[in-house]
Image 1: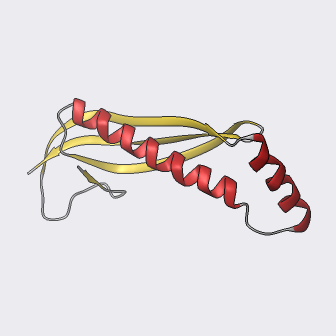
Image 2 (image 1 turned 60 degrees about the horizontal axis):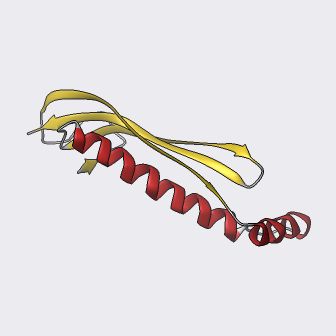
Length: 104
């Protein structure tokens, strides 16, 4: 599946628009990672536990978006975007979305 953040596919023609493709996940870290992150907040530095959580969340959300587009019969996604938000302490939602299309 071709996934692009731009609105066109260079060298290809969009033959059909299938609709909105989306995927999301809510991820959290266990209490040990949360305590470590709290200490990092005091002394400074990168919060590796949260970074790992967000990397994993992006991968899952994109995979689910691709699955959604595939189920619609699309062979590409254009205008792909990612959005995240905190839903609770130590938990984040990640949403991937774009337009599912058929290109030739």
